[in-house]
Structures are given as C-alpha cells and as structure tokens.
Length: 90
Image (cartoon, rainbow, N blue to C red; front, side, top):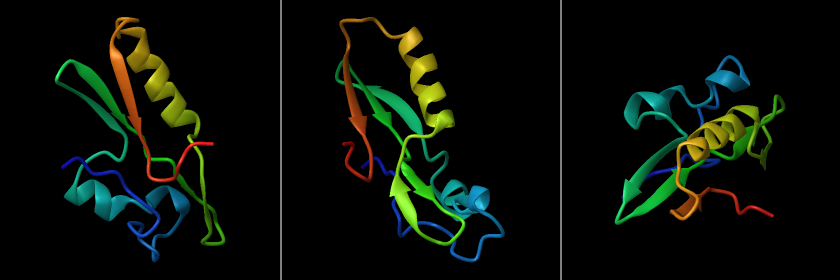
C-alpha cells in the first residue's frame, strides 16, 4: 500500500497552510514521492491545495511540478510512468 494525502488528512488546527501536513509527514513521510516497481516509475503527487479559508482544490503547485521535472530529467523516455493523485487531474 502506497499512501497519498487527501483532503481529510490535514491538520485543521495548523498555524498556516504550509503546516497542514505536519502530522502526515511525521507518520508517513513526504507527501510527494516516487518509487520504481515492476519496471515502472510511480509518481505519488500531493495535489490537495489548501486555502487560507479552510477550503481546498486540486492543484499541482510549483514544488510538485519542480519535483516531476527533476525526476523526469533522469528517467528514460521509454519508461512507463504512472501518476497517482488524490484529486483527479482534469
């Protein structure tokens, strides 16, 4: 089982939006990560973007895009890449 944080996994009492996944990080590790399995590259992206008013939206922010860009720079073009997110990409 490989986990990705979702909208119910945030710390609602966090001091700001940047600290909303502190408990997640302490229990599971980074909210965005990648691994290889059976010859494929799996990219687990935290795409839940919390707003200051407590709402959220599906978004791959600057840090997520930088992570993917850097990861793909070292990935062969013919490798199967599987992207996993909590909120569907549209």
